Length: 236
Length: 236
DNA sequence: CTTCAACTGATACTTAAGTTGCACAACAAG
DNA sequence: CTTGTTGTGCAACTTAAGTATCAGTTGAAG
Figure 1 (cartoon, rainbow over the protein chains, first blue to last red):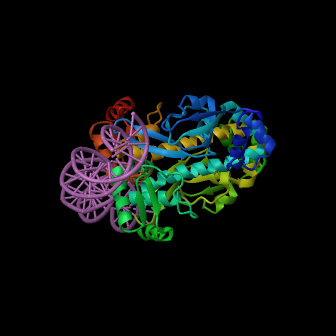
Figure 2 (figure 1 turned 30 degrees about the vertical axis):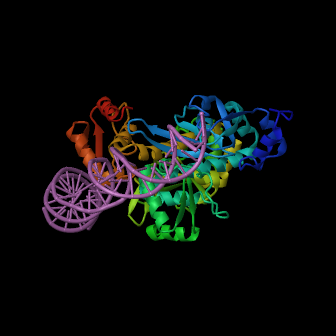
Figure 3 (figure 1 turned 60 degrees about the vertical axis):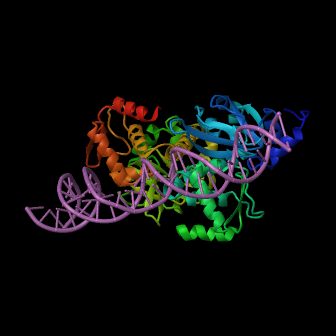
């Protein structure tokens, strides 16, 4: 795309505001955007395949995309993470050029921008500023995966659920971000459990006044109290 | 260290043979080594702390180091990974400069080389060749953590145990690498389970002729047959 | 407004995995 | 050789978590 492209400023500002690009100079962002074109998907579409991510790199502009893995024998699914605006995908393919076999599913209507992945490998060497924020993004990802695995081993489902809810509650508004509008089924898949177990815990949390629960909506009544309860059960 | 340092060639060749440095020119390796000095630890020592990894970067020359996380309430431990010769630590701190709270424990007598971590950040920008292999190393790490978490959710303890053993069996010699000489307790901690459960599975595998078991030693009798059994149980 | 699929809440049941406990074997150190 | 520590093999048991099932709600779509 270029400065004449429809909505160019919208995409430019999206990058400019996103975590990874905010420290880049405007000119660098303009140069990068030249390599991209935009694409949209509807809720429940499969925006990328393990083949397309070998050749293309995506940046999420709006909407959420769920990345998951299935066990087709047991029909259980694990949601590895959820991409949000500003996220780059697929970082793993970007790094090692190998196939990455996961399922990507749009949770909302989604806008992304797409470029050849080799072009992205070029900015990495050409824009040291970008490199810098990219490294801290990688660090964050490594930590996230490491903590996911660790939590699965060391903590029970109640704790993993409460940690998930706390981590995704905006401390200012008190509202859920990223995992709002999800069913109990999907929340279960994020903590490596099943709907029924999650529902049990949610009922308990509701009955003990920690949560307000509506269809596809959870809200913490008092963040501080829930944190206390978490500490009490786990001596964090 | 420099070319006059005792055993300089030993360290030089260790790097030269290791995966990440093998593609670098000799001169670059010499330049890098200038920043390092060597250090040794005995079995059961704690070679690095979450503080030291903020300022220093380590490369393992010989021996293995176990990286793990504890839940002190339940006394359960999860071994996140085991470093072997050629491994760089701590990549996460290298990337994002933040503290990384894990336990490092030498499984054998260990030799490492150490440098200021900022120096390492410098090579990353100065040696594009190194950058290239470093990226594929990062990709491997991301995949490893992602797969660890996924396996914990999607597969039972038997499957995780068998996958661990298969993954660490040298297809040529048929012997265990990396996880040899470990107790059932330690193997359990690697797959996110407990000794007793792992022991049960090992007894079954022994009785059905898949494994030969001795104190601190496992050996697959027939890799092909065990792979078949794994497929049978999981339709991989 | 009606219909239907998706989501939720609840109960009863099953099971894999974890816990406890003990006896014995192997090995390392004195 | 003796002693103590660490690892192994087993059995009995407990429990968190998963499965199965169903009724009732909600909200979107026609």
